[in-house]
Image: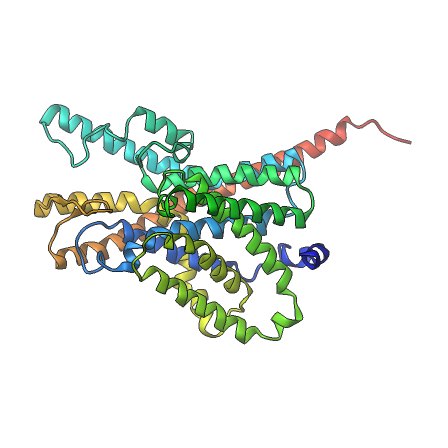
Length: 410
């Protein structure tokens, strides 16, 4: 650890500068694949896909998101948060990066809830989940103020996956505060490691890891993954320019491919007891090696056009999937008169015949991708670009204003 302390400052200008980010594409592709895997997990109707262990365990992809987020945020903002003004700018940019899409689907599910209420009131039609049961005013306000994932006693509400955005924004606040309190890069890495280890230990203590991967106590797995991502990013930055790594790129590429295969195998087996906790070291190792590996050999697939596109729209894919799946399930119920059947340890499953379920799954993927592309073009990117331009104008205005207040000197 002493050697790491001595060398971190020397590699920062290369590893974290705006012109040296060759591995974001591969990490974005991983995030896109994770988001699509989550969509398959949420398609809870009978089909050949539903019974696959990989699909049933893809809820663990949430924790991959958290590690990726910590990696990317530290990569982008390390060295850029040294004052309260810079911390405010960071939180401003992150808020407008995630909130507009969240707000859009909150309104969509709010309108669905209103429609269900009037259908029940005027026509006696009771939905599978009665109107305003979980999606009530209290839940709406929690979602509106982005705190829905911080309440350990509440069930998922409105756009269910958005609980992760809630806890991740809390991690952003903690991240910015850490930079304001701890100045040394090596010290920040040490504190992040301590936070992550403590959070993982707490998850194990809470109940053999099972509670770690629901919205209950969601801030704990988020903190564990996010700050583990910070540590992984710092370690990758330290090793990137190492002569030993540069001389063994083929070995690093092979190891990265092996960790991807190992992680997929981990998802493809039945999980019991403490096993889900392994998602943290496995995802950290995968992200670490993919970040170090060149865009060549067996990892070239992560740089192909379709995966790059999927990575670009991955946030919209994640946020849009619940709405698309709700619509398809409503159509399946209307067309087939299917009913939900209870499944121990899982959400109820809509019982349709397998061919119909397969066609519905394929249609849902196309629908999710289509909605995500529209959301990306019309909401996600415009608000991101606006927040950046506003922050830049505000920064320039403050500089000009401060310069005008200074008294001329001789």
